[in-house]
Image (cartoon, rainbow, N blue to C red; front, top):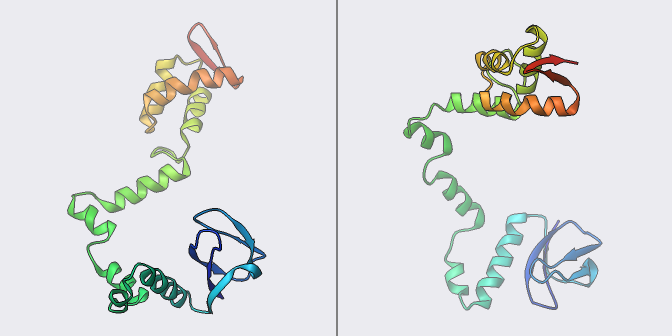
Length: 176
């Protein structure tokens, strides 16, 4: 159920879904009991509620006839979907391999790098596990081979030492 309601303070119109106990005006922030709001229309169809609200706003501006000549929200939405090109087509025309972008996005969202399926931190810790008391440069080389940037490693090592996960003595690191 969708209802077009109005604010008694600022005359704003908005659509409320369902029957909440209270509703807040999006313009002035006044909160009122839903039962006390002026309800202009109540319908099961969200698009119909949008049409009513838009028609009321157009009439307030003296543009009721112009609004009446326009297509419905559903038709305008379909036209907007068909207009122009989608993101994938745009990237393809710009010379970007969209499958590589999707793979990179998936790796970034999961915190994974290209090498070994580990996160960056896991890669640094693996270097400390597999190398015997490595220097910073040795850890960087190990991590870079697995797709982890050197800057990340140089930032991560002091943080791991500070957290007590790693010890550092005379430029050599050891996992605790």
